[in-house]
Image 1 (cartoon, rainbow, N blue to C red):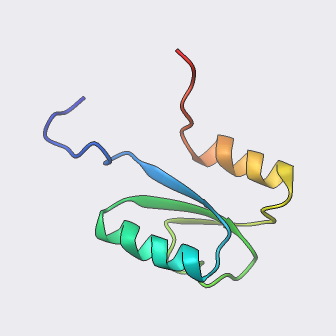
Image 2 (image 1 turned 30 degrees about the vertical axis):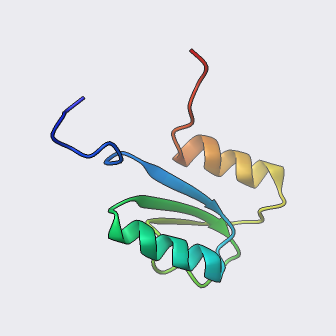
Length: 78
């Protein structure tokens, strides 16, 4: 690990739901240079500012699973 880069340089925040709360959270992420990956309705308020936006239902297990395991790095047990 490069000691000169911040600990969150490769961090990507997964957000379920693309509404106004997600939009405010993404605006804070932009300030910290943190990438965001959102699963939300087709044209949510944050669809234009998220690093990655995936249309889908947050109540659909397959959609949540697909976005989580395809676009996010999840911790594994040691």
